[in-house]
Image 1 (spheres, rainbow, N blue to C red):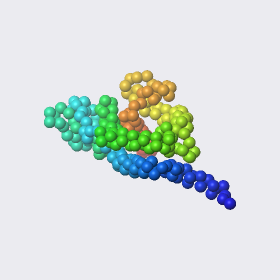
Image 2: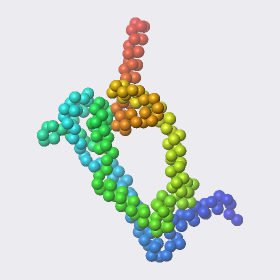
Image 3: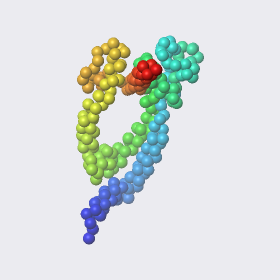
Length: 239
């Protein structure tokens, strides 16, 4: 006689066999195996190229970046286009991330951030192909979606349950997230001469993705400077 643990393991294995098309006719099973292999190949190719961006460089007007407070160590590494009117900022390496921390111009930071989070045409095609293959497989297995097919026999059971869980998690963490972003929102609004945000929604509205690194770096630099001033004052007092 099997124990409760052994029965549970057996049910899990049975669900896996069902997902593998154990009850399919030979023709449908052959199609299932072919689709599964294609999904694995395309999926691995997609993951391998996840860092592939749309453009290797973005053009930023020379006058805009020259007016900023970016250090010479970075500026000396930037090349210009043929006309000499634009800096060519790479979408790879350390330079774009340094500029996200040190560039005061929000428009430039937003362009850099968007470029870093863009995808090449080939990568979009891979994703489109992957979604189509998953949809075909789900239809063969009699499911509404690939998510429903994958969740069958698991704790979440249905895509709706996963969505509800994620929404509740977002709601639960909303206040904590706003609290972490508050110093960034305050510094940004002060530097732009705007009212200090009070509510969570105002904080989320004021802080953009390309603001985090810049203002976090400014806050760290300010705190470090304050500590140095305090250290000098104490040293003078005990001298």
